[in-house]
Image (tube, rainbow, N blue to C red; front, top):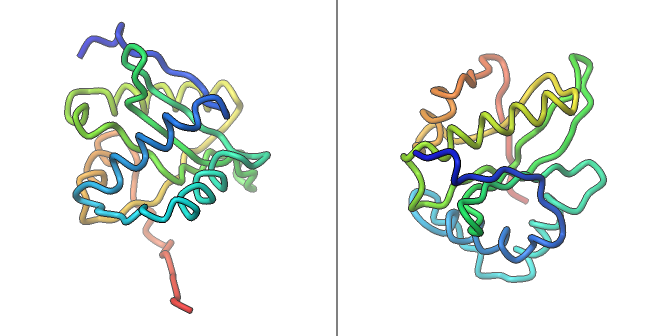
Length: 151
């Protein structure tokens, strides 16, 4: 991995189409296989993640190509301010080559500079991302569980 080819930056509205393209390309593929064919639902979801007053979105570029994406929000908690990562991905063709590790380290540095104390995210135990996050120093919370209910 040649870190000199990477550029890390905070993303805004100007990168909307690149964000959409990367998000769809990663999460409609294996192992997630999400169906994002409903353009309206996709547009609203990405707006939820990137268009709020507390949204925080980062990108990793290789040359001019967006290859990494982190979309989340700043949350003020009693233990300190944290970055809650709702979605994080690296372009499938770049996975396993060090880009994700570099990206996580850049996110950590940027969040420290913004005065944050924690990174928080959810993932499934059955996807490769689970082991990746553990290798990056994330730990599984033992007392928290996620609940859902279909309506």
